[in-house]
Image 1 (cartoon, rainbow, N blue to C red):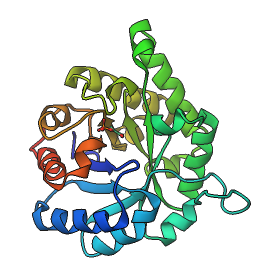
Image 2: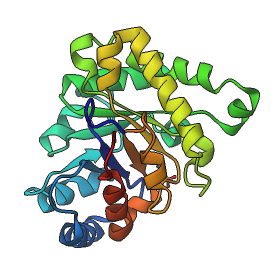
Image 3: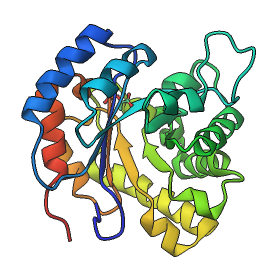
Image 4: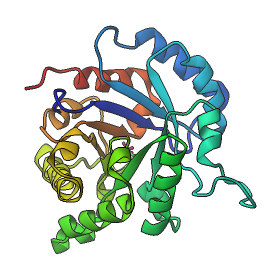
Length: 258
Ligand code: PEP
């Protein structure tokens, strides 16, 4: 982390977990144990049906609610889909875009790019996910793959809007597997992502973008991962479903930095 130049963000991704009633239970408990005072930005990205409850419960807090996906179109004949402006109207601040679980369902880099543009237009903060498979890592093509995903996701995003974007490095082999990247492995790729952004937008912008790590981050390994200079927070799946664990990760993000 480097709080001097950029925000530290701890974001939860609930995936397809919790009902609206369970959301209320979680938020009530979470609010009662949330760290007070100076702390990092906190986001909870929840299933679409839980958004109204999450927004209502967290209204008077600094926790931002987010969605887990959005459609690239503003409106129209897209049965079952949700547009970015609908999420904003429902009270969302963030939206996860290009999660590997959605890419596995057929979402392409072009889709990711279109969704990034739609989110920015609606003034949502996109949390753009990129990450390699174990096979790609073993082939030694992690950096090339990540460069390609980042460049595709950001294609056509103007300089004045790029600061609204958060990038999450999520190695696919570490998501939901209990197999975390080592702090060194995670730092290496997060630093590479910053280099890619530097080449596209210059040093000042690259320094200001928050890059998160995601992949089995939990209350035990968060401190070490977040101590890395280019890891500005976490995108947390499993551990964000349990208030005490999520709070411990927020506390790890409140550690002093250089
Ligand atoms: C995720 O869903 O983005 C994620 C990182 O999941 P987990 O923390 O469970 O690996």
